[in-house]
Amino acid sequence: MSTNAFEKLSNEAFELYLSTSVTHLEELPTCLEFYRNFVAQNRPVIIRNAFASWPALSKWNIEYFRQHYGTKDVTVTVTPNGYADAVTDGHFVLPLEKVMPIDQFLCSLENPVEDRVHYIQKQNSNLTQEFPELIADSANEIEWVSTLFGAKPDAVNFWMGDERAITSMHKDPYENMYCVVSGHKDFILHPPTDQPWIPYVNYPTAGYQEVDGELKIVPEGDGAIPWIDIDPLNPDYNKYPKYKNARQIHCRVHKGEMLYLPSLWFHHVRQSHGCIAVNYWYDMEYDIKYNYFEFVKDLINAHV
Image (cartoon, rainbow, N blue to C red; front, top):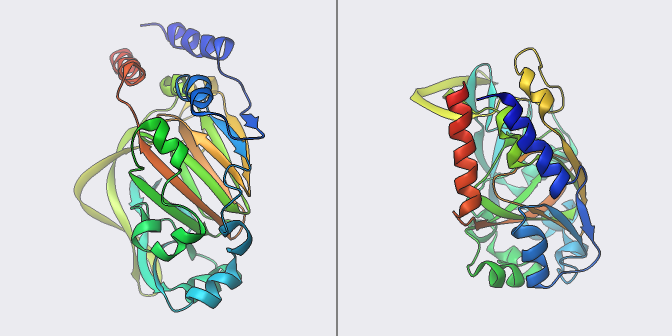
């Protein structure tokens, strides 16, 4: 199959319904408007003042967490370079996880140490599992979104960390409602039609461990994880020449804004220092969009 067909698919997507920028809405849409204009089209959108009633917007900061929850234990990931769950030295490397008092984590943000990047990013619905007391300041679901999807979120995740912490390029099988409570998040997005230019490759698994006071990569058994090794901030076109065909969509999500990140969209995330966010993962519908995505993946594999 000619790569021209993949280029045509991508070009037509941008000609017909996609844009090189993310739409902003000044107020909450109705469920029908949101579904028709964004979910059905698998198109991202940023909604301003989407959760203006949350007390968290005026309360959550370093001093608040120190004063009210300083002795509470929390699971924190630690890496030497800010990349957790990412390809490093030919391995898919998981971060070191440590349980520490919140005050100790906050000190690491105020006084960052070279080769030690701390990040609260445990993606196991940690808002409801580790921080249930914070639900009163935020929410354990977005009611109008739960109504729209006809289900509660699969996970509600709390994020807080160092500006050096970066989420590597990947995609998720979730409809993602990403709420920034403090600071900002910078997203680089790719629609599913860029799939031919963004390959997943199997990498042996490893994890960071402390060895003689240093974080070292230690292989973990014979398993392998499919992941993306492309850095959209500095793409290696010699290794991945087809990535030149992909179109980066950049957006910054500010305090008080909610990004709807549709399922199967590739994304790479950076943040301001001490940024705080909560995101809601709603399970995607395995409908015709998923069938098309898998069909294109099969064509890519056949072409290779």
